[in-house]
Image (tube, rainbow, N blue to C red; front, side, top):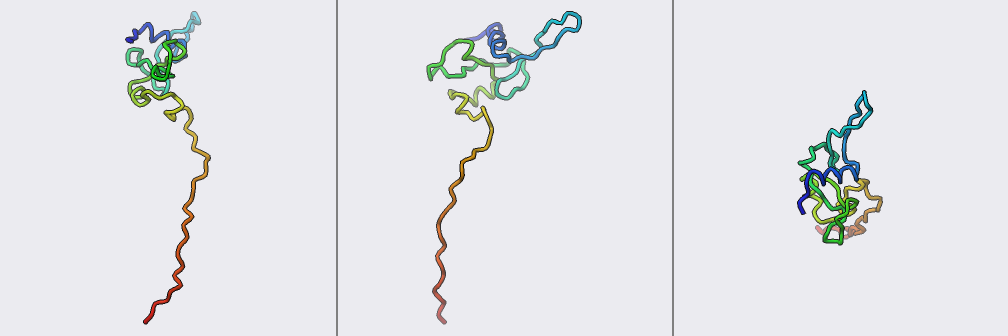
Amino acid sequence: MRYTNKDKAIIAQNRKQYFYEVDEWTGAKRITGYYCAECERRFSLGDLEVDHIRPRSKRGTERPSNLQLLCPRCNKGKGARTKAKTGTVSKKTSTAKRKTSTSKRKASSAKKKR
């Protein structure tokens, strides 16, 4: 499905993926830019791509709650994986202990004969 800028603006407002300035005189908010949900860099609305949080191949829907805006680089990197499988949700190091090798060295008890 091809999304228009109007559709992208609705998705951005639903996910709160926009920057705004407040007018000093009236106090009104004016949207000044949009950002990628993954890398959080600022882009214009036309440069961002619509991405399904839960992919359509995994029974994801077309509802605005399942859509987000990503830059082309992040969208290609994500592919048809969910956010939990891309590893971008949290970049904490794993607390699992690594297995160490338990191989014992052979004792060199044999003496060289002259």
